[in-house]
Length: 350
Image (cartoon, rainbow, N blue to C red; front, top):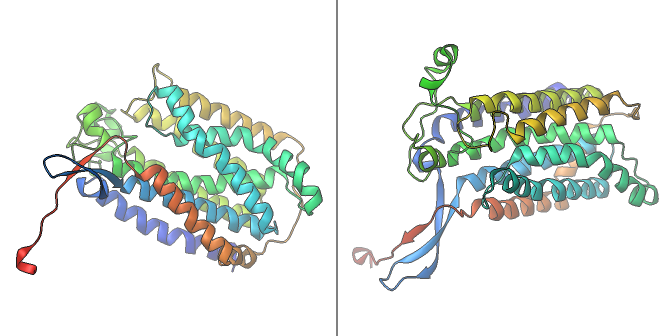
């Protein structure tokens, strides 16, 4: 398989998924997947926990990103144990950061931020790679280098960020400003394709009362830009242009985050410039600085089939399934909505 064919095979299903999601997910129907009864009230009804499409798409985004990371690293000949250790290190950094940074910035308990997780990853992964190579690499025969690892991680991250925005559309968070308050050129540009969210349990409704109001489709723009960056990053990486792949993915995604937040209406902290915008700008500067350093990028043959084969090993399949399930439990059990359930017998069916 050539890099061009791989990029095409990855891009087509992503394009179809995005086209469907932009049309359907703003509807009220696509917020809750199911409700599970927990305890019974005296009146006979049950209190339930809601399982959300936010969790479904978040878990899918995380899993797809890890799958791309495994494939890219495997294509460069990195052994499976090294990829597993690297993936565990990345997730151990980014998953807690998504909650911790959001709590610090927004001062709310039940919030997550992909921007904060990305910033933590960009800053912490280089020293983590150096430490992993020093502790295990030499004894195990690995050859983990900072730039190839960062390029693979950032390329995989862009896919996770892009698909993860579908979760935001479903929940109605990270929403754009009302179209009528946008600059004139944006009103013209998005007059035929705004997002109109429905449902009182979506964040855009209970936080700003903007359900039913045409808003700028910021989440869709972010999804398209990030997924396009992923495809470009994959092609560059598989062609051996590691340094360019890293620079492209980190600069475009983080600069877009700085820009896009000027068109958002949801709360991102006080001040004209949000903490997330500052973190993204610092991440870009940090990334550019890394590319200017004389970091080694060993020449090697790229074997896409070897990377794909890692995904079809039993350990790879079970690992990705387990990751999806854990991430769904972590992000899909709603803490900000509740449900009341009742059950009855259909006597006509007895």
